Amino acid sequence: MSGCAAFVGSFGKPGMRDLDFGRQLVDCLQQLDWPAGVVIEELPCSPALVLNRLQELRPSKVVLLGAVARDEVPGAVRRYAFHHALVPDVDHTLSVARQWGGLPADTVIIEVEPADTGYGPGFSEELVGSFDPILDMVREELAGVDFGGADVDVAAPAPAPAPAGPDLWPEDGGPMADLVGYARHHARARRSKSSPAPVAGVDLAGRVEPWGVFTDSGGDWYDALPLDGDRTVIVIGDVPGRGVEAAVAMSEVRAAVRAYAAIEGDAPARVVEHLDRLAATTGLGRGARLLYLVLEHGTVRFVNAGGCPPLMLDGTSGASFVDAAMSAPVGDPTEGGRPEASLELGLRSTLLLYTGGLVESRRVPRAIGMERLRQVAGEAPFALDALCDRVLSACTDGMRRDDDICLLAVRP
Image 1 (cartoon, rainbow, N blue to C red):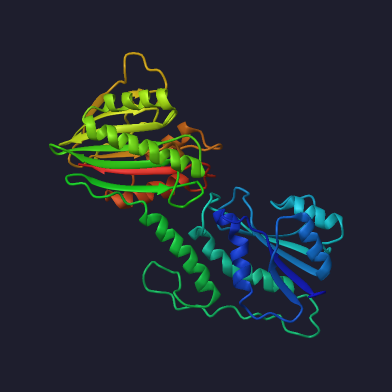
Image 2: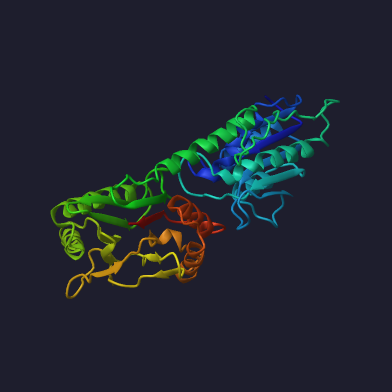
């Protein structure tokens, strides 16, 4: 096709969750009826290819869609005229296109604030509600374009009746339903992979939010293994790095921990010392941080090898961190062996275990994140699943994530 009155394009980063949202938007917009002279398509991130396409079409109006992180509320939608004073995420591509005459003066950017910028398919639930506002903005921008008398009243998908319960996502309704279903499917998939296997005599609830390449893979993990005599081994840890490499290293370290636990799992210090020797000999697990616990009738013996201090919720006086038995990560020299400590869990006590991604990022110091965790957990619901959901949501709200997150609630 050569020449058009208006061009609606999107930029996306394939495989990067919310940053790929623009491509999903274009897929939905292409299913609607638009006036002749409107071209809607995905754009590559190559400036040369974008310039070539725009010069081929020669549109008088350009609307560009995408997800751009600007430290605002996730799902927030922004619209502005493109100029060099405000540099968008695709600044290089757009600047090249403008410099070489590919972008008309009437170029508008419509962008949404991402919630999850990690790798993996799908996008976060926060972005679902932005579809209708973006569609309305696109229609408003095209309303002033001369289409030779054609009406720009693009019919939006018919909304489904709102259900009586808290789930406000429609099951039917054309492209919007497809978009909603896509987000819902991946949200459910991520949650379903976060439930720990049941262990007799111990109540467990956990959440895993990988940052890496796959939604079900990352460098953080937890485990619960039954031992003889009503004892249970509980482990939470993370390995250095992100993505596929971290996921592979994690699986190897997790297998090693299970093997040593099967041999002498009721001795936390000895298990971690075995890991130290393994790291020194082969390099496997070097730098891993983990918390290894043995739970028996409310008594917990544990070693903390570079991990975050557990948070104790006693059901009456709030929440407090357990700063005991702390030592260096796996593979670091430890004079005198690994320190070991114990604590007692009451009938209504809960031990909250977590990895560093929950409480810190490049922009959030660990001390601030830990204090937020303590306050939130102290006021969270008693039910373990509700507790995990509340803690995960509150501690990551507005935080620019850059690491995996693992969270495990334990109650005897």
